[in-house]
Length: 214
Image 1: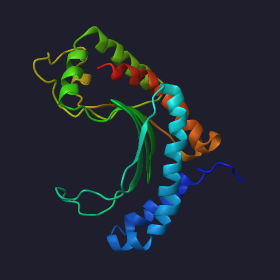
Image 2 (image 1 turned 45 degrees about the vertical axis):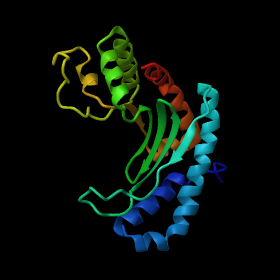
Image 3 (image 1 turned 180 degrees about the vertical axis):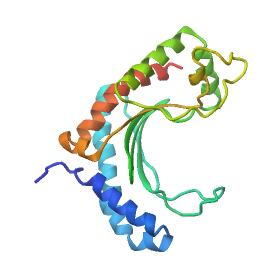
């Protein structure tokens, strides 16, 4: 019998989210809220606290934590289904953060800056045009060589006034900088969810340190 208090968080989350996908309504969610509270929310909050203590030792900073709410903001969306089909968590170490996403078909651990505000976006672009930008690019490439990934850049073109053939053009097209590692549930089971998260956060820490100096 497993002694890992989070051993069933992934399977419980996916079971609930799969059922929610077939019944994405306020009525169904309220009828099953006790399951959400007991099998998803409570262990997720405990996970946030447990990892937070380890992250404080790694970074020397007390992270603030967040469990993202299940409700979707549908005001400006054509999709009016009221609930997200994922369980997302954040450990915030401003200006950077560490992330965990559990979805119906994905399990991702990430680090970086989810979205640049106006001033940091300017600083990011200026940095990418300087030698320090090469250091950040090298850190990202090193992570990608170990199996990490990044989402596609938000912009299709390199923004002015930078040359369209800039050596850091792909990074200049970004309005965020997050690197992700994707895992299979069976991979997590071998060492435990906490161990995998903490190890991955440690791997991502050098990049976050660089991003913190923007």
